[in-house]
Length: 84
Image 1 (tube, rainbow, N blue to C red):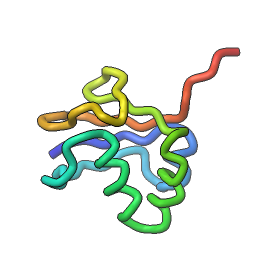
Image 2: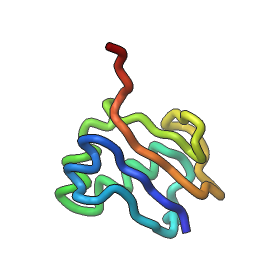
Image 3: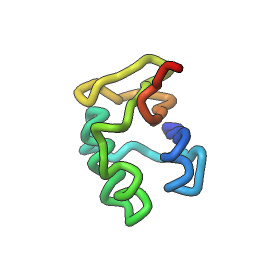
């Protein structure tokens, strides 16, 4: 099982801060996982529809869309961090 964490407006759109899933075998990268998440229903499609606006960390390390997710214990999704 892999824990998925959702922060800020992603959490609001999905109505949950986290969930545990078995990663689909076809999902080998962050980008493929985002594509699969979009297919899970309207809330996921709304949350991940602007996937360019979503950042990710795999096991607490920033990750790009082509990053491998095999064996990940935790994958976090969040909006871009801005300074202020």
